[in-house]
Length: 612
Image 1 (cartoon, helix red, strand yellow):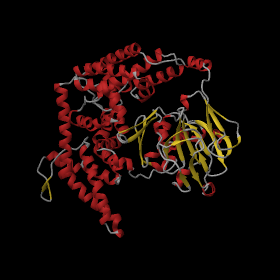
Image 2 (cartoon, one colour):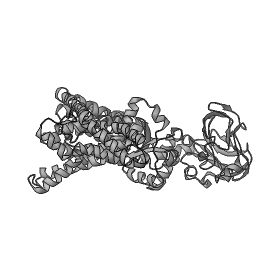
Image 3 (cartoon, helix red, strand yellow):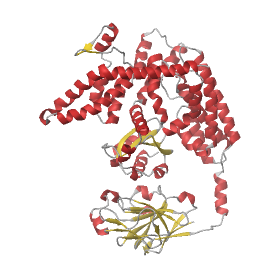
Image 4 (cartoon, one colour):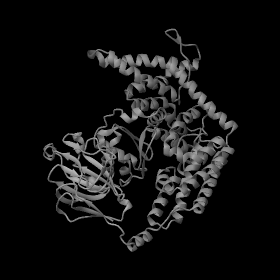
């Protein structure tokens, strides 16, 4: 896979590196926020080679790539610097979406650290379970505290990632988080003697593995730091700004925000434990059934603080682990059932690979590439997940540490209760069996690629749709356009015109669907349903509308030859931009082919290409 090309293609569909305000990734998704969302073409992103899917959820764009996502993000970073800045759209998001975006932004970057700790713990559990290592040995002792490190120092990790999301100084944030774990403070907690700060009582709490106190502390810091910057004299700002920030935030955290966050976290843990004790079957059942929908919408991030608090309070969690384990295995079972039944060789290959990946714990390729796409297998996943989750809930299955729920990390279910892992495997067995059978019974829309090809060859061409040139000039194949995104056909098939002047007219009878604010691109849908994008110049969006005048607006009905845009061709070229006009059929997949006319001189109104 060409990661550099993927990165360039994704940026080409999203307004470039300069349009990104925030970027991170999880196990399979590139997660992005943009300054100007009008520049983002999500449908074009989905067509980039290597991209499995793309969605916008919780105020954030998620590009599903798979386990190669880190390499793609590295290539994006090589192409320029992300300058940050809040988008106008982000400001308009409702409170719930903004909250979801913040939670995802905080916890996504630290997931690798938590997985590392959880998987080291799982390996250690296996080594002791099979008597390979003695739990009383010094080797066990060292590996064990290494595994515990990400969880114990979670306040520091959360402080850093919260600062990154709220655009504070991450190093000062780390100091605030680390202060909660300082040995001197933990000694005060152990001594249990009353402590005060300038006469105000300090609540003695062990903050190891907590998350909410750090989030609240850095939220306060995001308010105090700009204030400190504003009141600090320029000559000593380098010294006074961090001083003011820490001297205000740290004490308030110990006196007010820390205890408040601890109380909220404890309440969440108690509520979760209440559900486990009184209706233990309910939560795993619901999670098993609706985990695909939670993942699709990004809502699964909202449970992270509860899960982390449950680990800190009880040493295990039953909110998401059991249900997500079953759901992930069901995704794999459904994909393998599709691979077993389909006659389409390409789908069989995709479903087999995605199914194996889902069994190991990474479900996005299966969900976006198979079950969601075919719909009925997704219903089978939800039913199987509910059945397996119900069994897990009735038998009190819990997860003892973090880890991607899948067969590769089954050891996270090994703990004090030796039957826990047994019931965990039975639950996924039930879910997988039901899902596999239901996928075969429900069926799905399937047609072998070879059969489709034969039908296409046999079908007569009942309609030929002529698209005219939008300008006088020279007709060229789209592949010769000096822009990889346009030339590759990612956005659709078509042709290009090197213009002789700055008049661009309508090539069809139809309706204007979009006029870019910069005037350099116009979308039209013609009377036959052909969706066209007329793109004037390469990178001319950077001119921000200079030299371009649009003569139409969204919703206008146009006829062939109607003036769409005028631009100063010489001025644009003098600025160093190529003025080639690309005309693309953005819904090319709905037609058999797009056949360009012969290259050479062309006049506006003459045939540019034929859609069949």
